[in-house]
Length: 397
Image 1 (cartoon, rainbow, N blue to C red):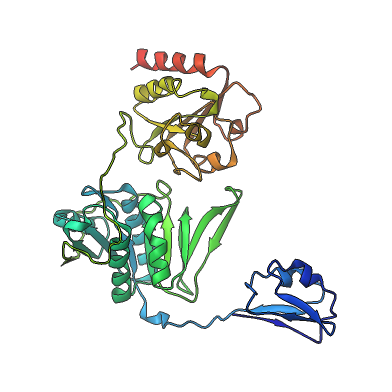
Image 2 (tube, rainbow, N blue to C red):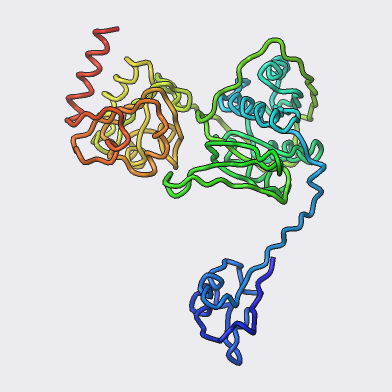
């Protein structure tokens, strides 16, 4: 990549100088001169010089790799305590569709310990080949270990597309993998597709608080990598007739490249369901007032058999742990029923729950933004409405 000044077009107006945030441009002899040691290629000077078009950035579109060597779709299978995360089944379902579109195979890579039977089960969910990496140190997730394993897998098997869930684990180490293999990464996708002519992955994700959907491609590097939000795609359906191959590799218990160690794992003890997996979520916001008032939220969630969610304001105030936060900075959810209690409806919160099948909003402010996306709105005091709903559901069980 390089930046150039067309001296014939440049009139020395100095508009580009004022636009440059790194002081990389000077006007010498009525011509713009760019100090490449200071230039960050941000493009602000190109935008400023639109009228004269004297400055341009030339991107190097040549690939340093032979992309024809890369084929097949690969999916990272996430597990916790030997249990496969639901998002991985969604990745298998979507990966199967993409592989079929390209006429290629679907690979699944599973790091874990004593999970041979689980690895074999992944074939039933669409994988043509399962790469099971077994090791005692893989029982629990650690960034460096998982990063090394997935990087080695990509360098050896050369998948054209690599998918993972946009969970806390996926968001933690998949970007590191992308950096190590010099690949592009589309994060937090809500839709995947394939340009079959160019064999390009089309990763679509929300931008600007969900007000815009951006489709991103990576034409010059491989693999094409994407992390996908939970609950936005259909999970793979088990097919007992499917046959495939499981390749098991064992790694030593002591892994020298791990820079950290797990001292303790503290679990969030909850009587209700995990919001990422829940079909029903009852969420509380700033309008709840205090931590003690979350009691009525929990009671309604329990009687409905659902999970307890929260807005960022409730979490920031220390009323409820972060694991309950719904929104762009929390978890994206897609339940069948979402009950928003005392939540005004910030753009960030609505971006994380607006794809719910049915939304009920309870708020004393009739002009609250959340009513714009709610299927049913209740204007009233939540301290009266929620207990009344809980009582009614208990009586009609």
